[in-house]
Image 1 (cartoon, rainbow, N blue to C red):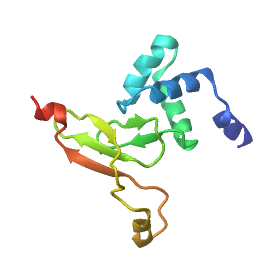
Image 2 (cartoon, one colour):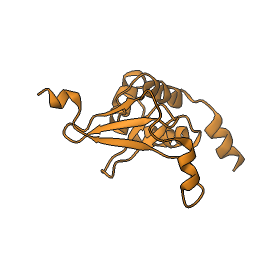
Image 3 (tube, helix red, strand yellow):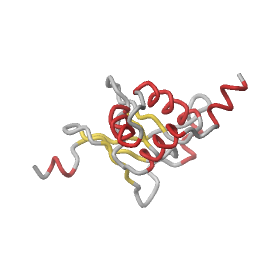
Length: 132
């Protein structure tokens, strides 16, 4: 057990590359996309290593997983609660920050239980698809 915790806290080269990829994109990529980017730096990295390190980074609360009920997840380098807009047509996921909070923190007082976190997402047609 101690080795697992130590291993999680250690910043291996693979984990560092994966984390930096997520920190330098706003695209909310899939693990496959992250893998392709990581191979440019670490040609011998495996997809399994990417998945394992994504799990470790999530456990360390450095990134978050966005699962929209599809066969694949997307990953976000920003672990803090923030808003997302998901385009129904092209599938693009984008962050946005309204000038006023849409969900007030005191709304959590009405949750029937003890929430660990929350996510607020909007779905529709993005501006790129609207302009086509």
